Each structure stands twice: as C-alpha cells, then as structure tokens.
Length: 327
Image (cartoon, rainbow, N blue to C red; front, top):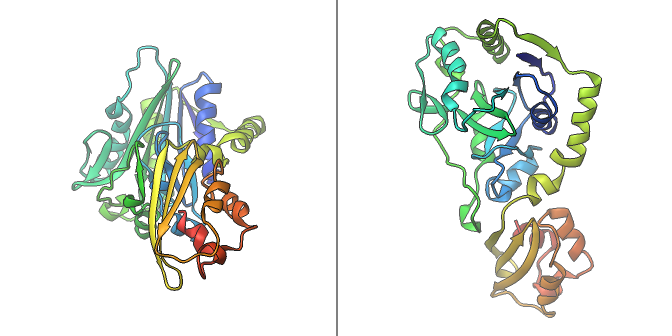
C-alpha cells in the first residue's frame, strides 16, 4: 500500500491524478486530497443541468467530470476527499462499506455516532456528510468519497442550485440531501488538516507495510498532460454530457417574452427554436440556423452570433441577453 502525499488543490489535476494511479500503476493506493472551490459531476450526468451556471461563473468555481458515476458534489478546502485504489480480480462493484469503514472508525474514536446509510452515504444524526462512488478498470477498483468537514454550506447550496424545468434529459440527476459538516459534531475543536492526519494514522495502523509516496516530477508531468488533453477541457467536462433538451422562458423589460428551446447532442446544438411575443424586423430563423452544430458553450455561441444585429431579430434585445437566455 502506497499512501500518496497530495498537496495540489487544483481540481483538474486531482481528478486526473486518480486516473493516473488507477491505470498507470500496479500498487494499492490511498490518497487524501482537497480541492479549491469546484463542482465534481458524475460520469453520466448532464453538467449544465446540475449547476447554477451564473453562480459558478461569478465565483470562479471550476467544474470537472470524474470517472465514476453518481451525483454532483461541491468541493472546497473545507471538504476532504479520500481515495482507495486496489487490485483485486475478484472485486465486486459497490463494496462501499469496506472502504468507508476506516472513516467511521476514526469518527467513532472522536465520539461521533456516524453511520453508513442508503446506497453510498455516511451520515451523522440523519444528515449526510459523505457521498461515495466506485468504478472498476480491468482488475483494479477505484473508490473515492467526500468528507464535509468545514465546507461553506452557502456555496454548496448555491453552486448546485438549478432550475430543473430548463432541462429534459436521460442523465442521472443528483439527489439533493440534507448535509452537515463533521466539525459541527466534534467535542473538541480541530481543523481539517488535523482530521486528515488522524485518518492517515488510522490507515497506517490498518496497513503496517504502507509506504509514503511523494509525486515525482515525471508523475506530475504525466498528470499535467492529462489535464491539458482531458480534465481541463470543455469536451470532457461539458461536451461529454448525454443528449438533452433545454427550454427557458425569459420575460424581458423591452422585448417581451422569449422562449429558448435547444436540442443538444454530444455537447453540440442540433436544433434551436425561439418562440414568444417579441417583435422583429428580420427572421430569427437565421440565428437558429447559425447555431446548428455549435457547442452549447457561451464563448462559442457569442462568436457565432456576433455578426448579427440582435435588435433586428428581437426588438431591443442585447447580445448579452440573448446569450444568457440560452443557459
């Protein structure tokens, strides 16, 4: 067992590092790590239907897709993440209890009555503080989980707040749960770093042959290359979403009501339709046509419509209002 020391807080790097250790190494791995503010979406989710896009942009919250299924989660430096990667040809998926037991043991030592409940959650007094997910690659299993320790709950609730009426798709929806921070239930105050040390010490007691491992420069370079080619890209984090239909009705002060409807596949807009009681001098179908095969991404849409005089198509509407209506 290698206990990999992780000091990076870049979410793109941290998610790429998991894939690196899963697929490029043979050793059993345990890692504790933290991210700067980020939303981590499940492999099968429609990213845009899981996030509050305006809040995410205003607060510089990064959005990253992970390898495992399950729902979207919010990370910040008050959230501690743990990862087990083990080789076992007889492994069966969804062995969540095995990998969460060490966490429950540490909390029990701290006098906290934490429990495994539902499909993959850890709770305190019925409130969730940890969600877990797994995947198998060849003969190796990756299990990771979140540990809300002192996360900013306002950011958590706002970043994941979304108008579900906008989207109709077959993607896996996140289940919004009542949540709590571990720090609120401690009998003696401690910070997240100290809590991390307690978990690490417990893992060492479970695996007496465990060795500590620091990332080499070669490790870091390979992981950085994975960020550039995959984890930091729009294609992976947004374009990889399942097909979905987007619908949004906007009431503008000067242009009336406009209904924006999109059919999106593989992250690309297939069809666009505008409805409403707006006035126009030119046919909005010209804008509908130019959006075909454009990524459902703000800068790409803005570039595609930049040559149009938008008020000719939607009286008194600005290009900013048009673009915002498409998200």
